[in-house]
Image (tube, rainbow, N blue to C red):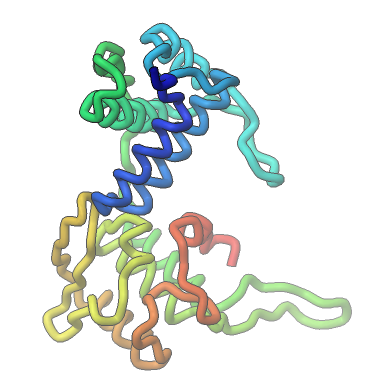
Length: 251
């Protein structure tokens, strides 16, 4: 009789299947992180079939415990957001559904566990003045002083890139991952639109306003990109974290 398949073996099998189905690398990374959290919580590698709904409920409840975020930068201690917990629930549901289809387990227990309801924060849109100030800081560094010298600032080498990126984000609302995947061939400036590949490998065309089209044209014309990504620093393509790290008020 074959030994039962453990949680780690099931995870490895599911991730192989996910790559074979060409799921987004971002989805796979998110699911991998969710599975790792469950493994850490359980503290062992039990057979997948031995994990009970109560084990999963305790795991999801534990995610609400405030913890210091990973990394060396000081950040506030807080629990995971309900949206993050919902994403973890979704990842576990995908794993258990696959395991049922593979005849590894008889039941999909995650569906018996209530889905967390994420927060719905009110989104306050930028004002025209906010946009003008965002774009203004693209051009020059923050003023600084040196002993015995007057206050000065410098032109920012990345001004054209950052202005184009900010306007594309404001104009289209693309996800950070979609922006990072944007290539020169995806930019149809003649018709003022870009083509992005979103979740579920769904391609869509997004219109650009005149200001965004002009900023993107200036950036592409002055900086030789072909066939590089639009978001690049010193030849290195950006990752989503680079977009999140953009803080114009600190430039």
